[in-house]
Image (cartoon, rainbow, N blue to C red):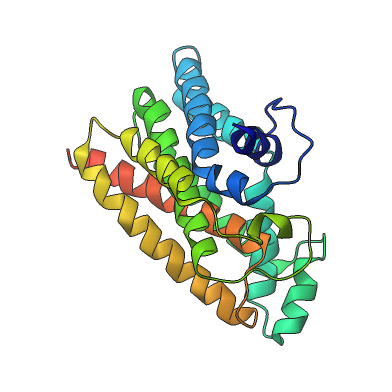
Length: 243
């Protein structure tokens, strides 16, 4: 329970009341945090859709998801975009990751990911948002955390303690199962769970190659954002074709 409380305290704005630095257990609990935040944001968006026009409900749902996570993953995505796409040595890329300012690559990435995320959300019926958000948010985080089992983490930084040991497999597996269970009405969604893991591991390997074989917290955030948008798009497309 302490690991879950710490995970909510660090990876969300919910009042979890934990002063502990995130450890390996909190990292393993990240998919469970994603499920909870996704269900909350989806429910708020669905309720808004009963009152306001559909485009405004999309804004409510997307805004709730962003605010509930404290924008921690989006911030990592922006930093990683600037660093990983820069044509500079790996050491310089790690320096860019520490720069609080955002440059051209961050803005370009934002211009691609956000419209894709919003378009996918708009294509999903609002009544399906609670489970779709929960499934995608949990599975995206699981796909990112899978990298902690195989790739080393760069020393130093506020998140380094979470990567000193491998995440507890049982807690991580529970998060994966709960994420998958959110799509029980559509069994085909199970296919997306290993697909997200494989894609997340591939993204992690690419990031590590750009950083001399290690990952940092910003890379994990970037993987979460990319997977979340991709999973929402996959869900929207499948629902469109009646799967």
